[in-house]
Length: 113
Ligand SMILES: [Zn+2]
Image 1 (cartoon, rainbow, N blue to C red):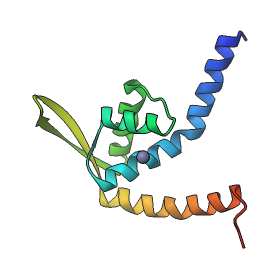
Image 2: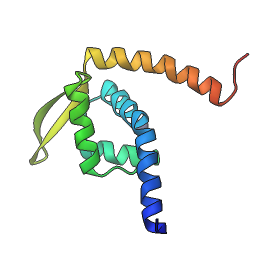
Image 3: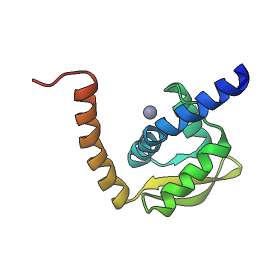
Image 4: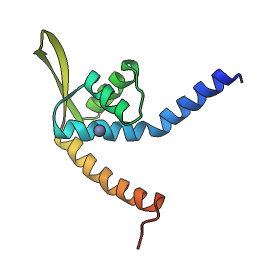
């Protein structure tokens, strides 16, 4: 495997490993206020995740199909945007995930009493 291919393969494997974090991150923000694709791409970049629209949009659609997000098209600033909000099921899943994350966090950082 050439270096470029290896780097790409590593990046893909990592993206797969972190995809749950990204989904939870999206769900978290969508539970606070409506989100749209580009805004979320920028927010995720701020946290060190580089997602292309070709990755984020299917992810958003998947979360919507799973019943965790609901979207609507809104006209604003001269264009249509699809806005996503967390559903009740999405908020419930987020609460469960929070417990699991706290548990994992404790183990990773060895902060158990
Ligand atoms: Zn964030």
